[in-house]
Length: 248
Image (cartoon, rainbow, N blue to C red):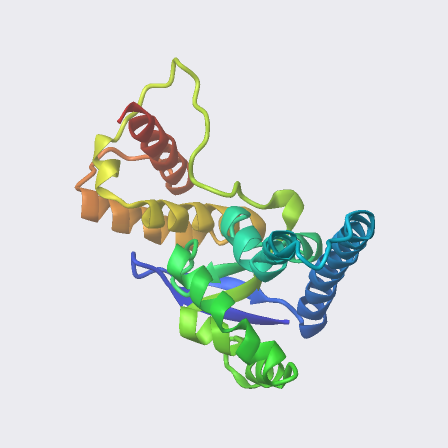
């Protein structure tokens, strides 16, 4: 198990744990088993359907339609990793079970194009190189990145599912909530994801010094003079961001 440091947009270093190789392998095996099970089921269903609807020699539209159905049913296999990592905040089903996830090299949630790039390079890492491309790059790179991660600017880190932060920065607030810092809307969604990541690490690893430095940096950037304890201040920013975002 190794630790890596990531510089955020606030010039604050976040520390993450990279997963052991066997954890990445187990996550891949789980995902592969899910994809394989799906392929067996849909092939069986299609075989049964074809057996009960045998086309005649002159029934070419039927054959074309069957080919289209086969292609359509293969789409979930092709986009499995892209779909789940995008909608589940960097986690496929296998990654979620094992407790690892994809993040951006800046410590925040990857953008859509980053998920797309690492997905497009999966064949290079696995299929075209018989897994050697992904294996060697993960072993030899400083941040344990496969080629797709290097190109996309992403990392794989460990995460404790039972204590993990929510998938996004957005959550429900009570109707009575009163915001304090309207200046927070000068920050972006990516900035708020970084703040939430700092809070998550603070609770898990007791890195209160990082929360304090980030608080001071944000106060300076947003010209906020009101004082709160660092962790409470960052939590207030998250709540205020949600409040004003929902009002817009």
